Image 1 (cartoon, rainbow, N blue to C red):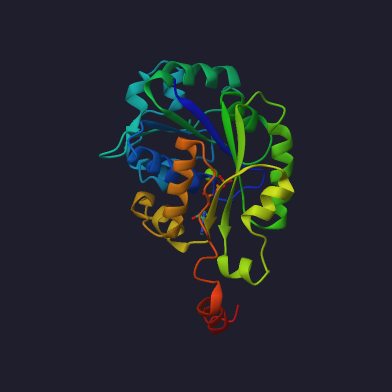
Image 2 (cartoon, rainbow, N blue to C red):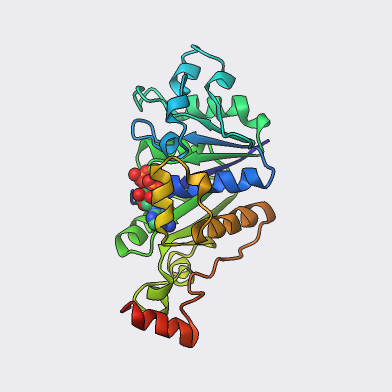
Amino acid sequence: MARKIVVTSGKGGVGKTSVLASLGICLATRGKSVLMIDGDVGLNNLDVVMGMENQVVYDMADVIDGKCHINQALIQEEGLGLYLLPSAHAYSSEKLTSAVFGELIARIESMFDFILIDCPAGIDGGFHRAVSCSDEAIAVTTPHIPAIRDCDKVLGLLRSYKLNSVSLIVNRVRGDFVVSGKMMGGGEISKLLRCPLIGVVPEDDTITVYSQLGRIGMNTSSSRDAIDMIACNILNNTFKLYDVTKGYRGLLGKIKRLVSGR
Ligand SMILES: Nc1ncnc2c1ncn2[C@@H]1O[C@H](COP(=O)(O)OP(=O)(O)OP(=O)(O)O)[C@@H](O)[C@H]1O
Ligand SMILES: [Mg+2]
């Protein structure tokens, strides 16, 4: 049976979809079979980030309505055991109940090692639908106060579900700002939110560039390394973290920060 992991957040735009897509690629590159499900009905963009939007023939709604077999709706990333089940583009969120969503997942979970569910931002029906069908949750926040506050609310709600684990990813951390005390680091945020930290991802423009090109798998920069460490943590039940302050500490780091005015 697959490990079903929902990637969620309180505030929108903190990087759930980017992190989930990269995590899927890292887990699949490590030999796991992975299904990514876009649970963000209506505002779906996992297919765009993966560069798969032109390959969508059938989506989740077609499977639910019996218009196709579930295997016909799955899109495979070339050369990897990584699949996407596209979101229901034109489906009312009310029709896609937790029971319907859960039944859909139950039909395919034996085929995969991991099912990663991209949760819509916020705490309404879409959140409940995605979380109630999962065994584990990863909450994503950035180091910014509004995102941390909303993440706290989401973590409170997640504790009321019967999940095997709830962990935290702090995304878009700037090592230079952490060293100069202008930004909280992942450890501090994890303590504040009382949630184990499974990953820290640096601020990295290449994520945006490759997402826009629909080629997030081609990202080989620091954010990819950080997300690969998260994949290892998930696989090995460890909590090793990418050091975002590397290169900004010591004399050389100080010179670098002085030169860039930070
Ligand atoms: N580590 C990062 N460094 C720089 N930019 C990032 C990073 N992670 C994500 N981004 C950018 O942040 C923006 C929002 O990311 P994304 O769409 O993944 O967020 P989201 O939480 O899924 O949003 P939504 O709540 O709308 O679904 C995108 O432009 C993405 O490229
Ligand atoms: Mg998203």
